[in-house]
Image (spheres, rainbow, N blue to C red):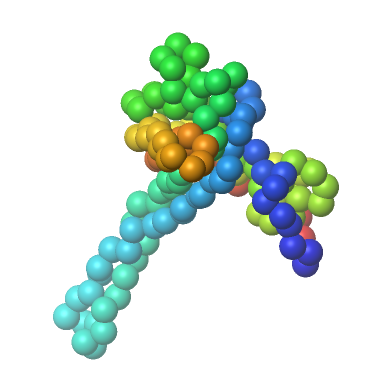
Length: 143
């Protein structure tokens, strides 16, 4: 398997491509429910509970594509992104999580936090946290 550089990654929403993204993370989890009973012979037993997904997006502030301004911004806390798509790469080959023919992970997400950081010796950056609303669509290419 070939490695893929993140330099061609991308984030898109209903509004289109988000400019100046530096990184994104995606965490997929499942609650582990303790199903231990007296018949478990002293060993814990677990079953799968609710599944979920969440993540972050980080970028450099770009005055041409303000990430927060109400009405034009993409990431206002409390807003729902009907379609959030996380691309590992936009060039071929794109084999980190998916193939171009299968498509990237995508779903509806609730923006839970927006923060901006300004430092004296660097760029102004922003960070967004989101939680998935429902299923994360993750097409899998045929093996």
